[in-house]
Image (cartoon, rainbow, N blue to C red; front, side, top):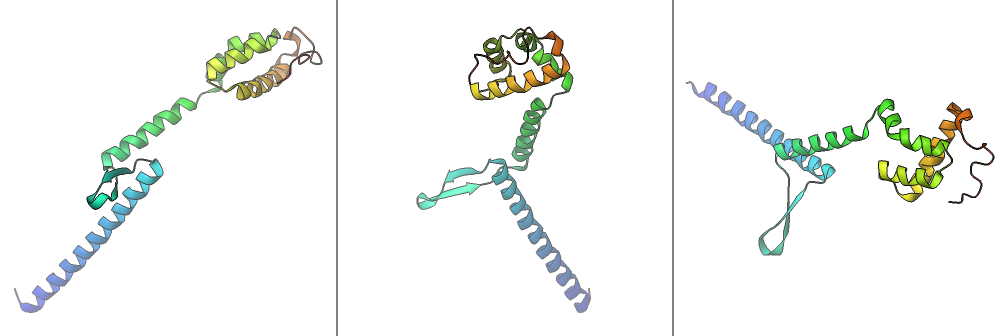
Length: 148
């Protein structure tokens, strides 16, 4: 191979290696950023008592993303599924059994007491609009004696 062609090949090889190294650094930065955002940065004891932060493998990152997607899917429900969850609670609301309704809301949705009261109020408003004739007491009397 002539000397000038060899120099050209070596220059192209050097440029390709530099580009490869830049892509590796960029990929490493992306992995680190993903691990930080996903909360899966790993700490390890390093030399001289230093703490080293290491990033997860690609497979671990993908696994965490899938876990988060699965968790999110559990929160996405259709109106039909939501209505099914409220069926028994709606009966308690319609019967003016607010305390029992709150207990059922907390059990069904895992809500705090404060959130359960807020959910009861919102559901009451919705039901009152949809089925005003099905309530056992008037709208004026419904909240009498109830303080949250």
